[in-house]
Amino acid sequence: MNFHEYQAKQLFAEFGIAVPPGKVARTPAEAVEAARALGGEQWMVKAQIHAVGRGKSGGVKFCDSLDKVKAAATGMLGKNMETYQSGGRALPVNLVLVTEATDIAKELYLSVLVDRSEKAVTFIASARGGVDIEQVARETPDEIHTVTVNFTEGLQPYQCRELGFALGLNAKQVNQLSKIMLGLYKLFNAKDLSLVELNPLAIVASGDLAALDGKVNSDDNAEFRHKVWPRWSASRRKTRPRPKPRPSTSTT
Image 1 (tube, one colour):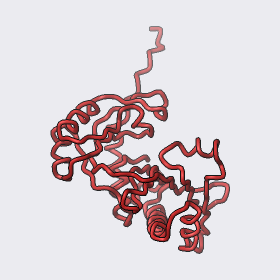
Image 2 (cartoon, helix red, strand yellow):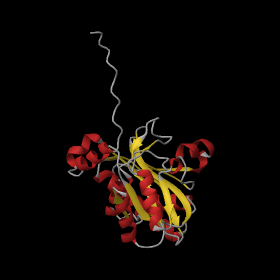
Image 3 (spheres, helix red, strand yellow):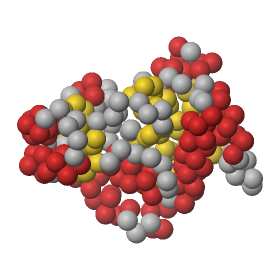
Image 4 (spheres, helix red, strand yellow):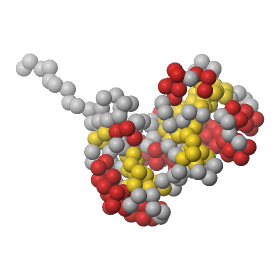
């Protein structure tokens, strides 16, 4: 099961991973109220669909006024959006996430998944965030760093520190990365997940790390162990395209 960005961020916050404040809206008026409640003068309006590449398809808008928040939400809600990862399908946008706009100093990439070849949970990281990680692997494979977690020992703090320094982080940021990685590892196991991806994991203007976007997939076989999953799954079905009816093959 795939999760919306706002659902992923709820999980991140639950496990102590810093995310920018945000609110979900179903109408342009709700989007304006969300921005007003968040405060500030700059916001991001983000279409909630199960595909990456929303920014290039008009699904992520920077807004510096409430009027622009309303216009951005109006341009997304009730529309269909196709991205390079949506498989040629236009996905319906029924929700938008309104968040505080954040000044980004640098974008990193961090994910955790099950490596079938190693039969272990593995972290993948790169100092080149904000782009497709497959592109980074093709162009500069030496910029991809991996951490394989021993099943019996679990993720160790020294592994987090080594990865942080390999990414060029300073001591404060390495400590923050360690907290994020340990939180992700707990989240991954506690919620029976198959993939968590932070892209970008950003270094913001203050020098701190924050998860500005997130992708989470769970193991469908474990859904019975998580009471909230059916409700979130219902939300997921509402934002998936209905299958086109097949033409009749009857000759009668």
